[in-house]
Length: 270
Image (cartoon, rainbow, N blue to C red; front, side, top):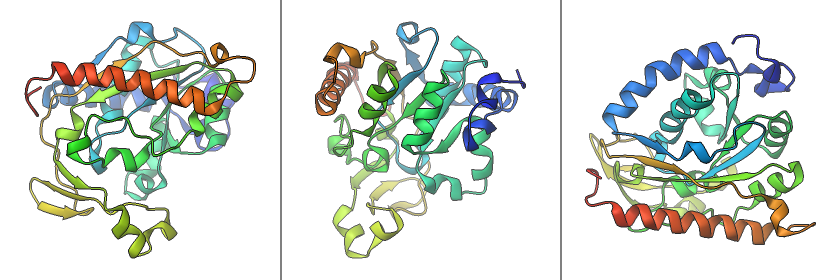
């Protein structure tokens, strides 16, 4: 539906979401993602059937993360294109040549203001609290939920009164070998001044050993994303403690990720 009421009521980038364009892109993307990554999105039936919701997921796969391309088509296949899905993203991905097209797909610059406006309009917002810090976690820690102490998502859910829907993803961290985030190196060369706090070292194909650039192409690792039961911040009392909510969300996610990891027989193959 090109005449989307929700999007028209939203400010700035949020209003650029184009359901017709999104449908076209998702329709072409999903067959490839399903074939290449043998992708599965499980338990969407537990997702709130309507209204605003804050979807919280671990981030995986480095620069060419497949998280959104895998989840987006599955979400729209179940709920249709009258229900916007907004993804909060680091400003760096908008530098790419296709950056101006991303808001039309619901991918917008990450900010508390954008999340709050979208959630209060009744839209779904997908956040990766760990950001690039999480997406470049070392292979030896690939099944660890680590948001680097970031709890803003919990504050946003509490303030807007929407449920938090945890989701875990496994497989994308096997698309190449992640040696280190390079946090110390990043600080030594002053990258935090340009909002970059890591200098990751990875090994993959076709470029072998890389330091951030050029990005290696992802191996065809089997990717599974699993939606978990919604968490209502109101269950934590009249004035929920942000740290308590965050700790509970991460604990639930870690248990689910451990379960998926235990069932995974081989790297890449799944």
